[in-house]
Amino acid sequence: MKLEDIIKARRSIKRFKDIPVPLDIIRPLLETSTWAPNHKMTQPWRFVVVHGDSRQKLAEATRAFMAGKEKDPEKKKEAGQRGFNKLSGVPMFIAVIMEENPNLMVREEDYAATSALIQNFSLLAWEQGIGMIWETYGMIHSTEFREALGVKPGEKIVGSLHIGYPDMIPTPRSRKPLDQLLTIMD
Image (cartoon, rainbow, N blue to C red; front, side, top):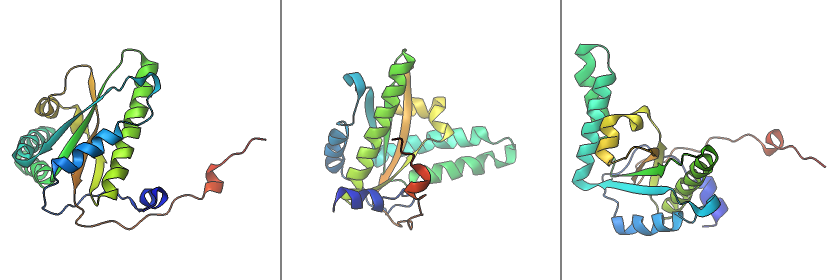
């Protein structure tokens, strides 16, 4: 497949087959992804891969977070279970964690570079028949979730990547025509 085709074919995947994703496939994809453009070569990223039985720890953190968010005491257990079910059905997670540089300009450049890294990973995974969705739900800021992943003070979770073999691939949605987006200054 040409890169253009991969970019246009890639979709955010929310439903996965119940098939484990081999770590030996993911490692080289992460390695290649780190070749994202990165001003000053700060390389501020690190990864936490959650797969196998360790997914339950993350699902339990999600249960606690979702139950804690629910105001109605009678609905807390149900809300927690929904959160648990959502995460326990994902074959693999990768938390992409970025060191937050105290210099705001460097931090913004690092965030952009980390986002480019995630896009690289997404395209490389798609090329291998692996789907993902890049999640940035409120839970990534919760103490339970951060502790479950070992996120340290001064670090930001840029994305919780849900990864697996697609069970359903959404149909493409149209994009705005370039003429609506392009200004050419002569």
